[in-house]
Image 1 (cartoon, each protein chain N blue to C red):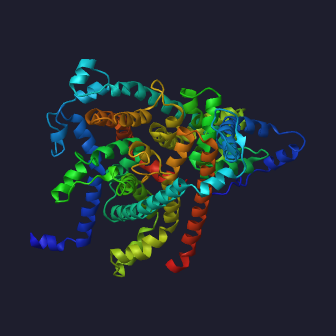
Image 2: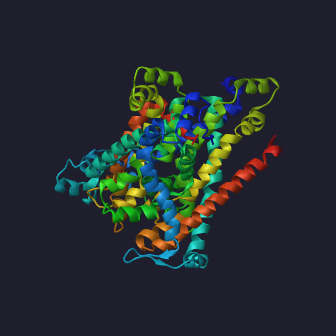
Image 3: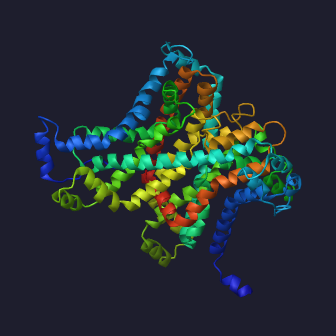
Length: 311
Length: 296
């Protein structure tokens, strides 16, 4: 992240700041006017609700009458709520199915493109799934994975594999949703890795080739170590995104069958907007936020900790 | 023949094969969507095993766009649920345009102040904006829903647009990075010519930043066009709902019996045509924008 330091610039501004001790400088007034619309948007829809979410989490509130303060009760209840633990398990499994496969395929695609072709058309096609909405992707796969008429079952049939229920079965639904999102994100992940690879000087590869290194060694000793910053970024952001899986579930399984895809954000959504338990839903969302922060810190530490071993 | 093959580096051939396989896997669901949408009424069971649409027809596209009479729709296997499509399309266009214009303009104003002007509280505010990037949407959506409800804005355009139209932290951060790179001398010249601060912003900063503004515009349009979660919470009634919400509801409303797959796929396909167009017309810029979005 970039520092928010002002560009080291004019003495005029320092002078203005001195004047500004007494009254706001004209520049400051102008600045506040420029910021005003965004500040209203930020305060009303980011700052205030962030605080309010925590406040609501200490109440019981169905929206029908005034919120009733209940202290930590929502948090205590959550710890003994089997559906909360189920949601955490489902979400964790989903992240585990999704991230490694998506990252490895994305990395492979990027390296293949980097070494074989600059084609803009190929990149355009590969990133297409990422550009259409989760709803479109969900509907398309609901049809492609249809147990009776879906194309995927037809293809499996060519290889003698019997029809699979996919989204309709408790055993396969979560893996199917992970598969759908791997399909949607692999091209975008590849694009990010590809941008990282292009930033690596060509001479390194030329020198490596002259030394007789094959593709694998070029990848292992040049691409992979130099991609580390991109890798950290891709893993951190995709894990954060993956934890918040919602849209695909809303379109395909709605938490079912038998809780198999009731991931945490879907569970929060149900509590807030189907059962109108605003307090409990807010407590769940605060816990999700804390879990995400912890996971992110752990990831950063782990990814940076293994640096010395890589080099 | 054998010689040429032998001379081909095996690694490259395997690389190409896997890459092309991944391209086919990427395209396949879109193809199935189009094929289903073009299949003649009553061929839904047979078409599954066919590579091409059977009894190809555009009738499903026509009925989804509202070009057919109710009798014709029923004859084509339609249920009437998809008659909402044209209105949802208009709603999405309106939602996207408002959000993009508002968000890019107001975020640019804020970004300019953060990049160029000095005022007490600048650093604190900027970090506050940045830290908002880390809060999961669902945390904010619950209080925001309550606010919109208290304002009486549920199922209205204002309610749907409000959280996006004035700023997003990403937009401010993104534009500030670019504005920092514009030479200060340009503005100083304008100031000497008697240009007001807003005049400088309007006549100097915005025109010199056409590329980043277009980049942000592209990213924001795609996001707004695809936005689902927030409209799904606050605007589900037929007269305001956007395409994503409408498509989701067509799916869930067809729980009894078989969904109207041909119509549904026609609607879904139509909803992504603008994305195809954007990618074909502005391909290079879209891809550059996405690569850049990796920097957030």
